[in-house]
Image (cartoon, rainbow, N blue to C red):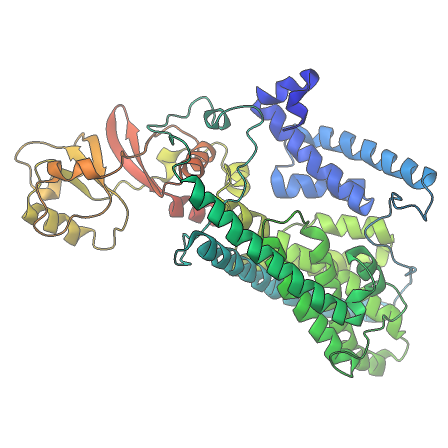
Length: 517
């Protein structure tokens, strides 16, 4: 958004492909600088936001390499004691070892079990995040926290263009919003409610963090370094007197506060906190497993053994939440431990597989809840699919002259229909059984919010109190259709072909496509 104000970057406001390339490259640069892992940053950016066949592939490598060089020179020139010294998010003092084949096989099984556990906990974390987000939205907007409870605190950047410029050239929209319909006092009240929630959470989080000795000592990066080093961290004697109890307490505290913090409109990252949560899970799992390993091999050193499980747990939990495999490269770049490469891959794949069975990934959940203009998972896997490929062609329609008996007949055929009902110009004298877009050409003239109650007819008199239906051409891409849904906050659109009603598509159908593709 700031770059478009400079003449040299004005092209960003005119080219959608260039904007997409720049955004993907920025993600790569951010991860590369945070972890000092350029290769992992590129793979992570392409994995969660784009495809590996994208033209941004080379651009991301170039941007991440320049960022890595800049980071290197800053670390060399700026003193370590300076506030502006650049340090990686974490590092470890573990050294490479050569375990036996039996040890490798035995430990690989438990690394995979840890990955499965991280997949389950990652899905639980996303569910908690979704619940908190909807609860806050319900409080701020003062409505029930149902499936559609949502609020967008900030509009997505348009890069110098209007809302229409976000859509592709072949997008046809029957109506666009006329602006913000909310009164200024309502907006100010919502901002005040949101500010109260943020301040209250900040106070509680600060108090609990300061009261916990392990969390009081450092930031996320330093905590992650303590968890993945050979030195056993001091968990303190509060609130419990045992290390195991305090580990569980720290895990629960960070698990809840991280989910709440991400659900609030605060400038915070998500990958770093997930690494910390995964390291705590891995270290706790390693502590529980070590007595059995020590009895079997009698050669394992506890601090090294537990630290390796912390590294694997950190990678697996990120995989379970972000549904990415690129963090394996990030951890490998930071540790250079070749014997951990296979455990990192196995645990991350197990976490992704289990997480996919339980819920959407974190990135797709954020896009869905905040109603952003595009759903990356659907966009990158369905570039050649159109609305006509997935539309529903068996749906309720009502003619302008429908009687009470006609409405009851249509309702009996579609008893579970909860969306808008299309109003069409049908064949005069036709029975409800042939009001079907598959059998005859129907022209959409309006829509009702739902089936009218008994006695409310003719339909022609009810149309004036309802919204203009959203119409999309059958050839529009799924990516563009989802952008229209998100921008207009509609739940259903009627698909037309050659000027006639051909089908219907709902937002829930697109979400289903995203999870199945």
